[in-house]
Image (tube, rainbow, N blue to C red; front, side):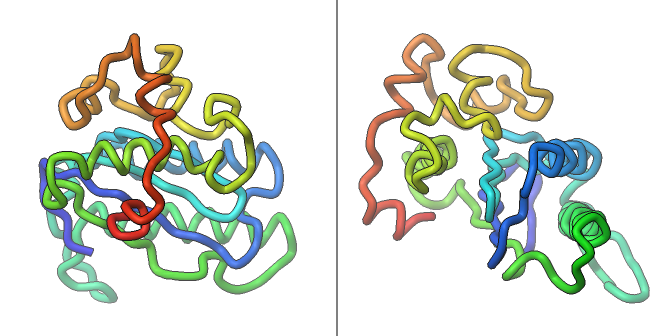
Length: 194
């Protein structure tokens, strides 16, 4: 992954098994996001589901810097922090559940959102918030606890999203957020862009 400062990205990864078996798993992962990702990027939207996660973020200048390490020369700080997030979560998960090996099925993917046309960031933003409903976990996105949906719909601080930055990247009216975000996305558009 190559990151550019000031660019928005959709990060996602999944597991072939359950990533979050209990509430504490979700909260532990959120704490890891705060520790590793927030110092080098602003989170615009997020969603954690039992077997995968989505983060929409804007890279800060510090995240695009490079660090030289013997085992990974010329690595960007955000890439390193993503690796630290996933490996530390996997180590703790493996220890707690007495398992071994990789937890994530693939390498984390990062899609740049600034180049897909004017609506691409909005499509991704809505997709992330609708994902619990699309995946069949809930009937309404607002009932899923592990998402930034309620931070935007109800205006509370979830400790992850930077709503001021989100409003710069995504044009929306908070008063109409619920209606706007519930617009059913065209499945073909999702498969093509996301």
